[in-house]
Image 1: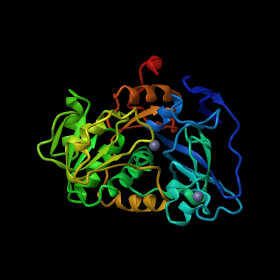
Image 2: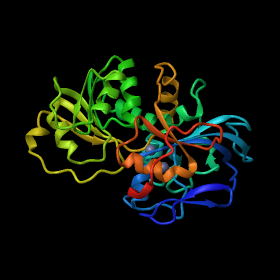
Image 3: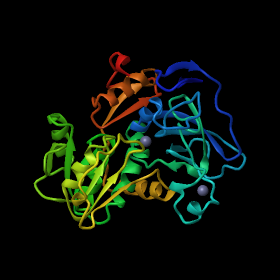
Image 4: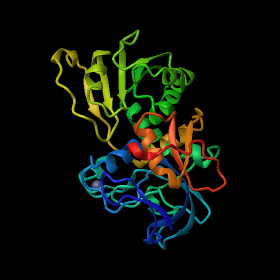
Length: 343
Ligand SMILES: [Zn+2]
Ligand SMILES: [Zn+2]
């Protein structure tokens, strides 16, 4: 099968013919239709996460059709359209798994990190961790739901019942979350790179009542701030914008160092926390909610072979909404991508 192959951290992906994945007894073999491109893929590519399988096929927002199911994979049948998320396998036995916190499993394996992902024509995935993709979402529009949407949703849950919610970094996750937050009756304040007026207009078009550059004070204090951009300097900024008792949730898997800040920013029961991974329950809840909102994902489509361009566009902040790779030769790329030189 054709795949985009990461051989060593720091190098561009190489297009290669590789062996199709082997089907384990609990696995589904999927023909990939679309795979979302996530900030985490960049962190893996850059060597910022410590234990990727190498060589590796990246990609953990996969929409595909079941070609074959292993002998003990009973949840789906050939022809079903399923989604594969970041959480690829958990042990079911550690204290976290037993407490319903499988997102923190001691031995978790993640898609496109410990096991090959969806930047390829085929993928194998444990059927217990796959989701049925809701009808009404075409493949390309569904892909970003599987990480940007789903882990964003978990971050929003950790914001409790906060009404005034700030979103720092208005990319794939925030553009979904703004819609969910509005649906839940919350008020959305969006923070983009300073001077990114197009991004601020985009945020307002999705229901943000205010949009400005990171570092600008919002018109009212926030009860929760979700930080999606991997920039540690945003953490004190977000704390500064926070109401007493509010929470800052860092939603990325990696972030640059957080600068020191005066205790006063945390005082008055403000909370600073991260969100890690997802549970299958998060996925079931979010994929049931998304059609009710209904979430509309905005995607920039790249052919599989242009995965390096998609990653470069994401790195440069040039993606509006979410970047998605298509494996369907008949679907029209919206972004053929420039030279991936800056990767
Ligand atoms: Zn992701
Ligand atoms: Zn476990």
